[in-house]
Image (cartoon, rainbow, N blue to C red; front, side):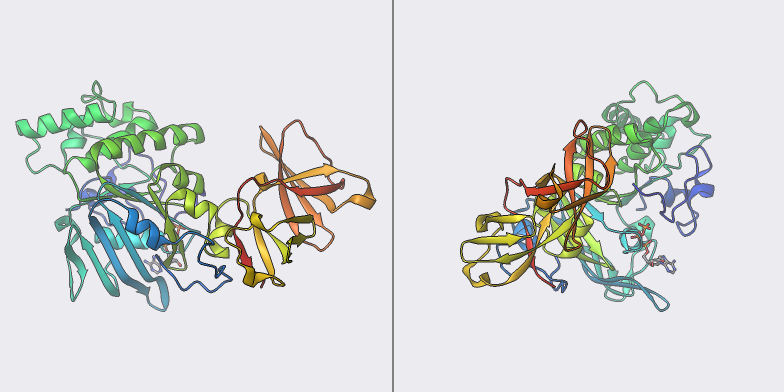
Length: 417
Ligand code: ATP
């Protein structure tokens, strides 16, 4: 998780109005986790065999549930800057879709337009079948059934946990509200914490209160903006599993934003990889990770390298040996004689120390991660590959190695550039 989001990192016990951040509005009701009421055309060397890579069309057709949120060709300009450049996105009932992409690609702006905190320059946004932006009108945030959970949680410090959760309800003092708050406290595992002050809670507990507060008015869509980035690493991993459980149990439709691909891949029903303001690929996490339809998506997910290969009659030839053509997913006969770049990740490759004469290249860097080493190997032709090894297999920088492709699954590939 990178920490360069433009949203502020203020402590959860600050006043919500103070923590709302630069452009997140100043109304506490819109800022601290309360209710405020497949793209084609990539041109960077997408493998053109239809079998290669996932397609969002397939996934969307298979998805169950009615569309709850629909963005159609949404564009957002700030002066001469185009933050969102034709966003199409459909989120179905009960699913968690995560927008994943590099800093500045337009994720937060998209979320803010869904919430009503920004108006699209062009395009339409519909929530539960109602157009809330576009066609000449914009529904204000408080009239949309959209909940928000920002990274700073922003609970009201002068209210108890139960009062924080009840805050967004129409009649917070009613018996129905009391029952709803009790149910939500139970759902988020804080049944005995209703009378506490937010200041007396841990970071993970505060986050669960913020989530409960957002869920209280039963929003059609819940938006989560980097919800785990203020938590330490081990808590973050536990909380994301917990939040996913809560969202599933609540049956809520949710859109999350993150830079953290592991988080996105582990908790999302579908992932939308965003590049320069539009969705470049959308699908279930496994499909997007295994079969990225563009080099951008491939490069963004995992430590991708591209291994040049020549397709022969009988196999493929690479700088690290010849392999069966079956290794390349969906490679048709038409590619014989062509040059392609094969997507390889560290777990697809192994290095073996050898004498100079047999070497494919040399180790130029080693990354120690605890359980494993990732060795960066520079081949004679300059290609750099990364090889994943157990922490007990120690090679030195400068060591000559042979590299072997050990992938036991078909690999994605792209026509050579
Ligand atoms: P990060 O992951 O770093 O939060 P992001 O993908 O969420 O990035 P956005 O915050 O949506 O990206 O920003 C997209 C682009 O729009 C950036 O170039 C940003 O500088 C620009 N931008 C966002 N908000 C404004 C604004 N209010 N005025 C001008 N430019 C803006």
